[in-house]
Length: 442
Ligand SMILES: [Zn+2]
Image 1 (cartoon, helix red, strand yellow):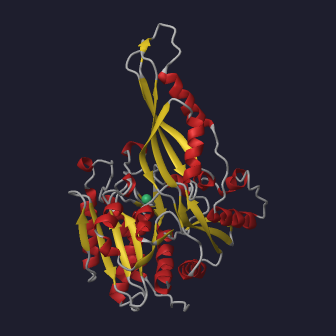
Image 2 (cartoon, rainbow, N blue to C red; image 1 turned 120 degrees about the vertical axis):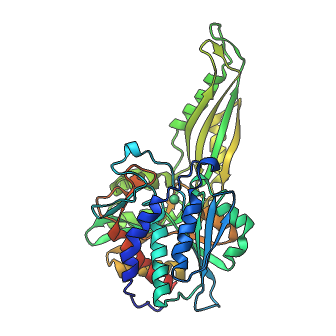
């Protein structure tokens, strides 16, 4: 594989911070309800303008009024190669200005960071890709493969009105795409001055949100009562919440733990890897959850009066299962929930996993190492879910690769959906250089 000559990328590196600020200022809060979430249309139109400025045509599609996604195709120089999808979501989760040091939709440039909701999830990647393709268009650079750009709605509510809808209604837009890159991966964890792990996401846990409903005999709260729905439900909820399911090492997590072991020069007990993971700082909470299936109770609902025993009681549980573990997870749940309780799925979506190998991965690794000679790229499994679950349905191998070299002391994991979400401008510029090398050699 020929290494592309590093382009100057002055324009892209110069404008990325401003593009990100502008995009953050377009409030694309996704509340999960279209009547209060319509900023995606303005954001998609803004992206379309920025692309049109440099002669790139794009198409905006709406699943519901205001719920807009944008798709564009940059033609590659080698039509015999399959296309590569680069996708990012435009929506963000809500933010309460009272909790923040800056207004969450100000896009403020302060202390070398761009601040605001979406700065790391994931308007950062949106802006890096936009800055890069604008630079390419101005300087006449063309990638070898067709690159399909997708800026989509509704990721934060599961993608039903964004990626999932596009995949179901307009699969033609992704014709020929065999691989995809997007969010939650490609960022660094500093081991020491000359060694940084770059976590590339190759797998996502599956999603199983469920409602548990216990039945019992309704009655007066003052009587002797041995068939109480609230008691039965709470016993099941307590078992679920306090049981740690067994560790399962999937291939990406095995590779990840090997890399951690080697980088820090420590032995890792495969049955108790948590202790070793704690060294990674805040990110260990996210990564630790990818070592096993999990079921966390999140909502309770029962009763209407202090002296009335209700006939039913229900709870909502956020379940997540590893790739290949769906049946085992259901068996684990059944054992913990016990008798007399009904379980129904509220949201159920598959786990995805691909391997950390092949020419595309080689290009990622080479691009990271060319820009950071202390880079050690490693695969990992994401505990949450992204739009990769939708695009995988079209047969694409999906990777979380939004490259950022981060300062050693930044608690990056806490910024996702967090207060004072922000991203270093230097990290964005690094990301552009890596993406340029990667997309021109992929
Ligand atoms: Zn995201």
